[in-house]
Length: 374
Figure 1 (cartoon, helix red, strand yellow):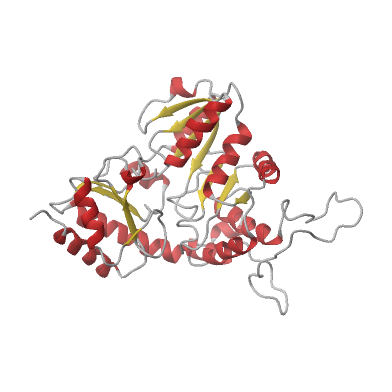
Figure 2: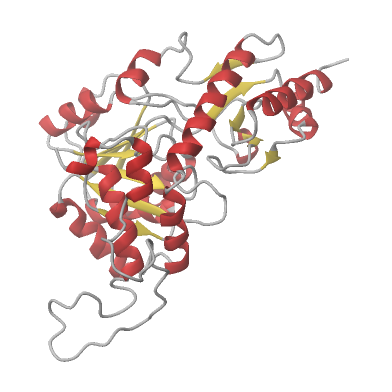
């Protein structure tokens, strides 16, 4: 076990990726803005040569991510750029990819609309289904746990073992949990993928993503894809992301504890149906979530007996922004089916922020009462 793994979550998040002490230097160096670097003679072995190939600000953030994920990492311009890099760098005509049916719609759209057109066979499976036949000849198995927005839980360790026995790679979208609450690589996955736009950075002020791999060789194709396609992260956004890691544990602790309290209140509310939160003791996936997660996330999904009622509820909330992301310090929510996603028309995906729990829960309860049918 490396030294940093003996430290607690808050300590690791605060110190991740920081260089050693140097007289007169800041703890976290500012972003490096450069399209080129001095480069004499043979470029082989040069730390940096051109802005599409590497940047010191990327390197610092990727070092931080490696400490949190447990494997080498590469930063990307968005979460979907990270997803695309794993899929398109490892799949070609004749290959089979197995995709979680209840996962993020952008990932499913990529598989259905683009991979299939390239000759990749796309198979969809739902949480709880037996995967034997689906993964028998697969090249890649793509999981998302907890899934967005249904919050389904997949047994990452069991599926990774089964997939590896069949010769398949395993990638896990870990956006909802972040590497501070769940470590897919330790559970056997080959890749941990995250939209850093959301809870990892948590301030709703940047778009970013990353891929971490269980071994350096596993990241080579992903890095090559980034360099060739140019799906690179801006240095300022990357620096903002690294800065934000210092408060990750503090934000998650507040958000997850409030999410649990909100889920419990909603479960007892007569106007609310189908509350989904893996931290609830009665949730069907609770035992599995507790076994592979240290926190249950900041997102709660629930139904409100019809799309119109859900829209009225959102309009009545004072502290909750109606917006289409999650994981930020400001609470936000939306009726997810407005995007045409395959979910109930009244499903509300609620992202719990860092407001005082009593204020936020009170606001939700008042909005539920004000939006009730008369």
